[in-house]
Image (cartoon, rainbow over all chains, first blue to last red; front, side, top):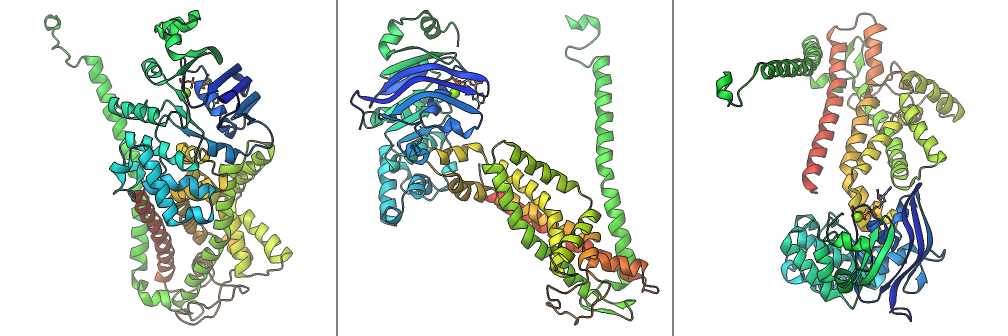
Length: 258
Length: 302
Ligand SMILES: Nc1ncnc2c1ncn2[C@@H]1O[C@H](COP(=O)(O)OP(=O)(O)OP(=O)(O)O)[C@@H](O)[C@H]1O
Ligand SMILES: [Mg+2]
């Protein structure tokens, strides 16, 4: 599902303040449906903040003010009739440190269903099916099918992170936001998550924040470079890295700052 | 090279030695002060046990006071204290926990919630004799509960509330933020987050905080003396349900005061044995709290 333009997320003139500090300035961008889009930029430039606007998690801090429009699948999510509960079902988020809940693997995967669904969807067979489907999608089923009752906290970090992705899937999200999903993982873990991203691409729109430019280059179709709360450049990844249009982008990807 | 200056390489120089001496002295002084804590405890307990020895037996606990309280046991006071403590916790624990959940999970930083916070902090600082007067006015007279177990436990409940709230908030705050974020991100409401994740992971801290309040409630004299505890009440030996809630009762703290200062000719070991019972009750409850916490901690891993 996407709007006529093929964009999953459209931001128009988004400004955001933490108290008096402006963290985002006039951000306008279009994120294409089914693509992997990476957000790069030096520390503190507002990548996480922007990402968290897309499912309105920022609003849990009550000193945040957001202005502007963000359309997800064509609908302005800052409209008063938008239910945060339904929005977050469609726009899932994966964090820097894997954050499985301190319950079993099984309960982690069905947590979203328990939160949202009722009746038949919560019968054992339906839940079992959802768990198998979600874990299969993230390549964990084979490893974990005999350990579904183990505490999720005891898994390896890479498995935990995959589990955190799997936890979103039973809710049938459209968009998955990832905030430096690999920075707590080793090389193999990173490779596994990237492989998983490729597998999920197309069905889900993925937005990934990363500090690792090589990763942005390897994984993403489009790349957004941010600096001090502004979007500086947004192009196809290979173009952005080969022929950056902006001097600041050039300097950043050459590693002169950041 | 250093060899020519007379010091071995990386060896101790005089300033280094001076620092090490200071360090050793500091450690010794701090350690001694900490160890000094043990002395009063041992002295108190030791003194009590020695003086109470002739009366320390099960009979003393189960028996009622005799001959104008100069002999016999302390059963009515012991049961009275249990009544007061449990009833007061039955009032203060639910209110305290729910209030703390509100303050920690829902409350935004506005003037209303700042006023609540201020109230909680100040309530904790009110002296118990003032609570006693308040209880007298509010529960005994205004609410017409009379001098009764109900009035006394409500007074104790008000007194313990702020500490229960503080302990609960601390336990809630110790639940990692990432758990909450995980919940919000699948669209859980605050209540679902609290129920599914926050409470199960903070219950050990909450319980400990509540149990520790038992010892405070058990030891208070003034609030219960003003509102529902009497010198003497005739009950059956070993009777577990001797009181109705609208009656007055006896309590250990008050009983200790009475037999130590108001009644002439009390057998000498009885006040000390009463103190031992009170102390043992409190220590046992504390020990229970600690083992509960250790047990629950050992089950949670993050
Ligand atoms: N909760 C907050 N309250 C106040 N200021 C914040 C908050 N979160 C972020 N900021 C500020 O907003 C700016 C952008 O932060 P943000 O976390 O979005 O940057 P980032 O690009 O994700 O950085 P990093 O690469 O280090 O993760 C920073 O200057 C930061 O100090
Ligand atoms: Mg960040």
